[in-house]
Image (cartoon, rainbow, N blue to C red; front, side, top):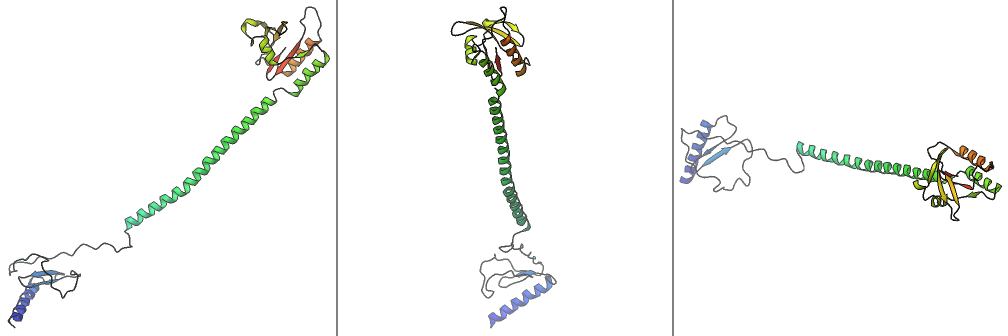
Length: 244
């Protein structure tokens, strides 16, 4: 009974201090030697409230009438529950998704564009190569070949020389074999394998003389027969080279 009366008196003292100094406040705490009291607008105790908490805080001296108890500030806001991200996290995730989407779209388009450019370049080179082959194949036109064979049939002494034979006879058109320059090109001295000396007239590629001019010159020389004129032994037509 004496212990109960002692506890009741302590509670009365704590309650009177609370009403005197903490009136109208949202929270507060009164600390005594043997009895403490605390009230807040939020739950501040975790666990079974019927249990006794030991050594949670150091002992403080008893509060007298001249001391104003300190007001305890509420704890910081608890972190958001699991599964709910903040606004910054949501914005970061959206930015990453947007970047991945852009990469997923741009990378295939870039690959397709690169393949298209490579295909166009390859096709142009292929067409250019075919054009070069066609030009080389068409270097000796049928009318040129027809002229040479027709002249060869008219005279058994007319010969169609290979260009390699002309190069060998003139030592690759060396300057030592140069006799002079005539109409539409230089004239070189040459020697056939049978040691016959010949004069070789090489049509200059920049002279502007085309097939028609060369044809007329060949036909004219082939028809002329005179002691002061050299005899036309033959000609050579190979690519851009036209030689008498």
